[in-house]
Amino acid sequence: MKNIKKVIELLTISLVIAGIFVGCKNIDSFSREGSKGGLPKIGVAIYKYDDNFMSYVRMLMEKAAIGKAALNMNGSENDQAKQSEQVDTMITKGVKALAINLVDPKAAQGILDKAKAAKLPVIFFNKEPDASVLAGYDKVWYVGTNSAESGILQGKMIAKLWKANPGWDKDKDGILSYVLLKGEPGHPDAEARTKYVIEELIKEGIGVKELAKDTAMWDAVKATDKMDGWLSKFGNKIEFVIANNDGMALGAIASLEKSGYLTGSKFIPIVGVDAIPDAIEKIKSGEMSGTVLNNAKDQGTAIIDLAVNLANNRNLLEGTSWKLENNKYIRVPYINITRDNTDVADQAYK
Image (cartoon, rainbow, N blue to C red; front, side):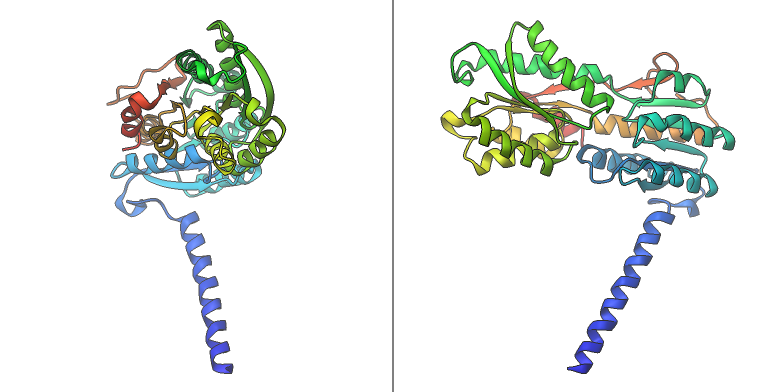
């Protein structure tokens, strides 16, 4: 027994040590090709790795960088102080450009101050800084979407679906009674999607009634908990679930499935934003009614194309087809996705 106990202890110690080395490797190494191949080093920080959409952007950035750049990838764990330290470390490691998905858009100026001191170009992406911050440095740009567009398109999609499915109006009052799962408060996308989806429904002539609205912080588990409470309170009075992203839409689906709300007369339509693969499968199966494609492939590719040019001291758009808006922005358009065009979303993740 003593020998077995000793072996277990040694194995445990070995695993801990291995974990430490793996952790260090993830922090210190440059992705795929690595700095050994003589490729320019680009420092990347993602606000948190377990965000559904950003996990795909990260994967597609790594794919786009093969043979072009050595990426120093960092997950900031939704901690702005940690991200700022990561930027310091990446600069020390000799990166030639920075690509930053901010934890807090208000921290953009602090990141730019560090980049300016090192004379480094910066690509912000996904979380848009204030325009005045971008205007204050000639080596900073933004890659992302027009936040309002996602809410407007989602509203148009809901209106079209609602009109095509009169049976969804359970109480036959001509009013769409909804609950809304909001992303992180203060996040430009969360605020714009929440505002414009409802404004667009009204413009489309749809009467609306808000039963409940609350944040689930982009998170599926939090969305499930929130939806559990709403189902307990409102039950079949809920005629539509609107989610600021697909992660929360999937969390709502998990809650509805537990309570038998996705079949027959208890069906409740759900729409999200992002068109991540898991959500597309739910649309194909009929459990989810639609989403808005937030093109991870185009965004990831654009970020790398621009950062590689900058790291090589080339013109920002050299050899690319991207169009610059107001000298600072690359805007990737959204696309509505329903069961009729899921192939469009499938292509965006290949």
